[in-house]
Length: 86
Image 1 (cartoon, rainbow, N blue to C red):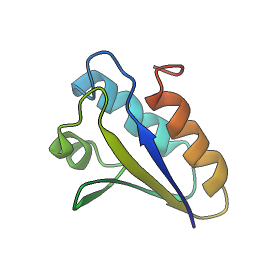
Image 2: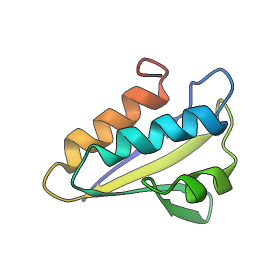
Image 3: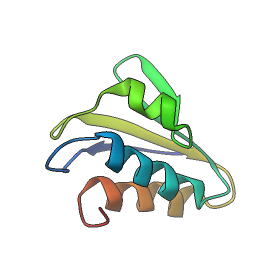
Image 4: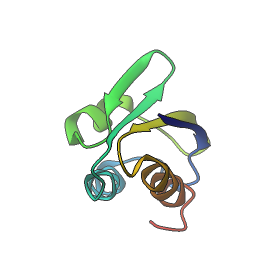
């Protein structure tokens, strides 16, 4: 399992459009990917789950992935959340 803390660096946080794009990014990978904010942990491939987190710019979350491409998956999510991929 690969796990990393990431700070969101998206100007408007994770509103509907960025969440949809993040779910698309997560869905590219075979691995199971989860995003945790405080005590809430959701599947990164679930748009409803991701919307329920209500994440904002500057928030820190934990991304974890387990599977054959877990390292690449976490790296892809980190690039997206750092606004380089958004």
